[in-house]
Length: 341
Image 1 (cartoon, rainbow, N blue to C red):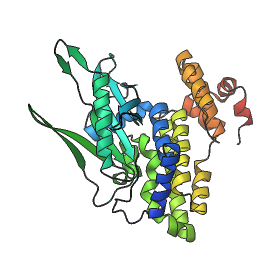
Image 2 (image 1 turned 90 degrees about the vertical axis):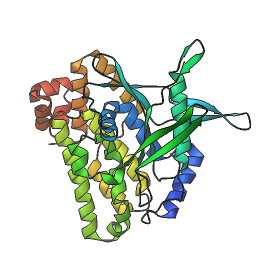
Image 3 (image 1 turned 180 degrees about the horizontal axis):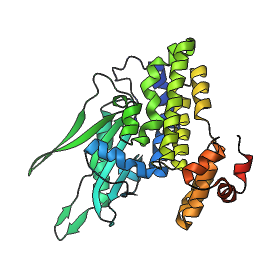
Image 4 (image 1 turned 30 degrees about the vertical axis):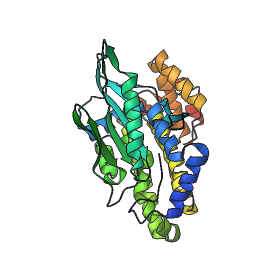
């Protein structure tokens, strides 16, 4: 992501964007970058619905996301090498293992034209990675590209273009634009765009100052967060999401919130309290990843423990997972018996 002051969204303070720019310069990224990468790594299946939304495809939930190389070294004008990390370059395979499309999706908090340069660098490098050389001809295929803008305003484009002028003719490389501001809770859940949920509070960022100082407005905002969490629970119960995905979504939502509402204590603490849950570290993710390959029972156990630790009642967890309370206790090593009632 790259942050500048070139946006017409007056509700976002220059100070906020300056602090994000400093964070990126010091650490090589922002909490928003971290949340986006974590979602792509830990909830890759949810990218399928984002692709369907942006590119009007119709991939089924049984399709598979396969990632390409996300780090490349780009030659600089001074002869040195500059490392670039792309947020999301991947292919989608159908149930038979056939690649149906290649995609590049970048995420940026505030629109600016530098994203065109970044997309071009990433897209051409991804195309080179999969290039085919036959005698005197090299064939490269540019991925379908898009940018998710977390903030947007009147001047944010509906799409972007890169014009390639060659001796053989001119080609226009289209870059689709997805704006977080275009999606409310109903559209997110109705279209299964669960991947966007950690960034949902960008849509309410302009209200934080008033909510911080107005009890009624704060209650309204926190009520919206509560409805979001309830709908996530319903998605898990309907088996549209796993409990693990729910937990990652909420944890990444808190990562985003921590930066977005860092100057609004009451907003931040109130929303964090509703989101609840414990932070999942890399070791827990590794164990879960290995467990899903052992068998359904292992995955069931991880889902059960995640829901119980997030405060769901054992009876509800058992109903969601379609087991008895006794079987749940066996699965979780009696965690169910110790869960809050």
